Length: 280
Image (cartoon, rainbow, N blue to C red; front, side, top):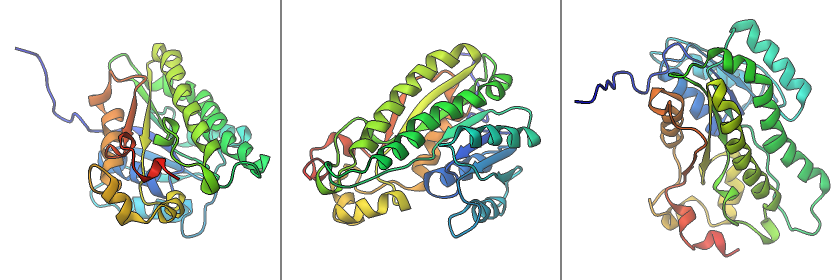
């Protein structure tokens, strides 16, 4: 008989997490899941503190969740700037000596015709989606390695996109540099898995398809709206908060202890079809 227990398999009891881009959308879904699963402290960061989608409102919502044992803390930071990441590390250390989970979710995009693309837009996309992820993980590695053990490693989750493995959008609303940046983030995560594995840190990639959000809603509408994209999806719908929460809990809990260097698409299988997304 196998000696196996699955009690609290997906629990994050006592864990400390940091989610970049955590004030809305996928980042807020992940932060919510972590607190509901028992996390002690969940740090969220974004560029803005105030406003309808700033950190302050998200922290207030998170700390009002029913039945949580931990707390959310917001720290404004621009993860495209290494100085801001260094400050973020210092701020996190003021509250917690170690970090168990790092979710690199902050992202930037640009859409438009190919030839007139301004160079600053490419720099912005690459600075946030690639260089920012590299520096974020690099500078938090000491805190992550201080927490990880062979049986319970610390976790890095890079939030990418299915756009990093196909060619979904060209033409007047093309997202070529965004797609290229996500492909780079995917391979960055593979390198980090090998680099950091011996330090008891796993690194995996989550690649969402379309989830209604501020970042995606404009493109969703251009492609025909949520109803049309849902009809073209093998699952018959777009992504929902529980979909991103589930994969995050898998990778960041005891259930994912031995998963390292993997890429998981969360798109209902849409990337596998030759539908409208490939015919712009």
